[in-house]
Length: 122
Image (cartoon, rainbow, N blue to C red; front, side):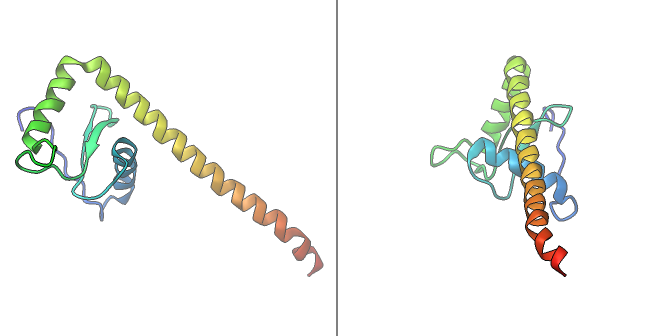
């Protein structure tokens, strides 16, 4: 707790935040799930995350304590790289949200156009 500001978000109470950070973890790791740990810049931009980290290193995975030390080291000693990673992640998430929004708009437009002849004959 000396190195981080810990915030627990209940996915049932804040599904909006869960969705944002789950998208980030899936983009970073190719998978999602819970428990989920996401490391953010002070502005809320994610720069690293994952799902389960064991209490002791195993199966090629670091322990949660090792992960915390590595993230802290990167944040304090390679801040420019961390901020670059956060910027790329935020940009990718924004592009994805835009594309999803555009796809929804496109689907609605196509449906409206397809229904126009049927509506006019009623």
